[in-house]
Length: 507
Ligand SMILES: [Zn+2]
Ligand SMILES: [Zn+2]
Image (cartoon, rainbow, N blue to C red; front, side, top):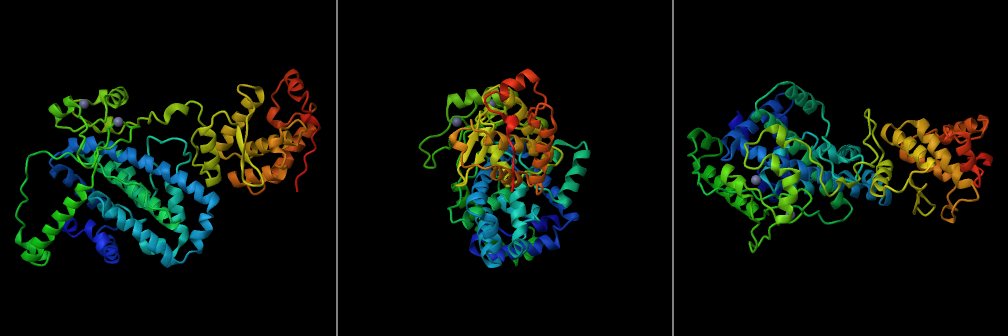
């Protein structure tokens, strides 16, 4: 059965020739042979077989594993950035829900077919993605929006070292089971490849669909060129029984010829990338320039590691390459997360990732992303025209330290009390006369509404009033954000501002 499935997978070249048929072939295959719970086991065995049988085998798969992980992380960062714009400026959620099933279906099918036609492994990855059921996605608009939120990062200010895996009960259970086994390197990399390709295809489909829906061209897309060794391998003769299955020897021959042509066409589009993580250089398609390769890796391991320049080679040596150069690879080394140096600069000051399963709203992701990009800002408020107005308390000052501590807790856990204390403080501060003209038209009601939207807290108004009540009862009338300020410090902070005199009113 295993061999049969490989041969009868809908082909990448059919995705563009007849997308509807290609899709329905996939659908019946997924229902018939690749359905849970047996599906993953079959696919896992096929993946292991593919790795063992390929000319580069296990070492080749280990070497290219980071080439799946890093671009997937970058795709997810890009989707997040784009989606935040569409959510806030293009009313994406309502527009998608209002579009009919046919319109949604058209964008999704175009995206899937376009992508799967580009690479064999992306096409095969459809077998790992029960989420990509066209019927379900087109009928219920919410399913696609949920899928989008599932691939969006919680902070788009940097490229993470690990992608967000899309949770699915069947795959989660299977992956957890695999993790418990102390398996061979072959099994580990097969399992990891399936999970990462799954994530990569879903992320790409979401991105291409969104682009198509808002009327933008698809993003630039290039597949890494694979190194071909000069050893020619002759394809083995097809067993007669198998040829029969494909509609007789003539039909089987025609099919293989077609596959070969399609494969050549796909391969001619590939480009070689520079191996340094934060470099985006690719070898010119016309072959005018060939990137030099790491000599040691090539001579000892026949591994192709290309760099656009000596600068990139040097930088990558320190970051990653030193540990693996000319050596036999293992799964632990290739799966170790390495932070992209281009985005690592704010790593120390960055607002942390959410904890305890807290899920940020798109509005909060936008806020976190903007703050992490501009670490001197303490918060970004929006005026009546939706223009950003950054708040900056001044580095290292007491209000900043207290505010940031509260902000960290609110943004990583969603703790409503911290949100209320923070919102209350900004309301009080902006009501004082000494406040800058920039914030003139931002009212306390607007601040509370913004925080309620970002943190999805319906009763934030009541909570802020409770915080005000606590301030009223404090003998020194300190806003609760500054409750730990010693009396002398409080006197200084309050001196020209009179925070203690503010009477907060909310509609
Ligand atoms: Zn480079
Ligand atoms: Zn090397």
